[in-house]
Image 1 (cartoon, rainbow, N blue to C red):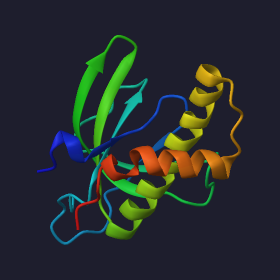
Image 2: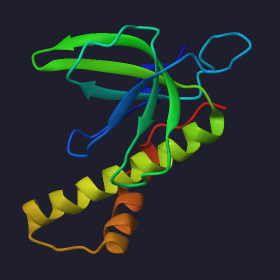
Image 3: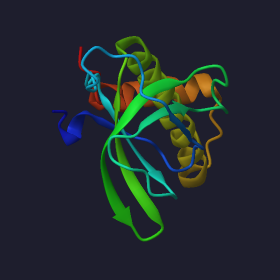
Image 4: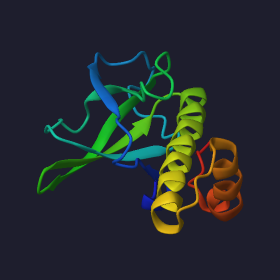
Length: 139
């Protein structure tokens, strides 16, 4: 089982797309547990449901296969715990999530300090400050 620290918490500022999918081909029909993602969603999704995750604003051609392994009610929707089903997709999703965090960091620095960092400057600062603590993908 994946511990809470191994879930990447998707930032609410970046749109995420979750689409229902048929069960993915798997010999065991069990999640492979290659890391996890926590995200908020407006609709109730059944635990055990298979989903395709995408971040169309960052990479419209990429999606990751996942399965909902837990759900928690919130005031305005649900928090979902998703497990990746493919190690390569999990790795790429982790990279895209870091891009999300860098984008949020860039906005936060502008709001807090008035510094207008370009994408590269924001990435370098974020990597130096936070990359070492970013959840790893289980392999």
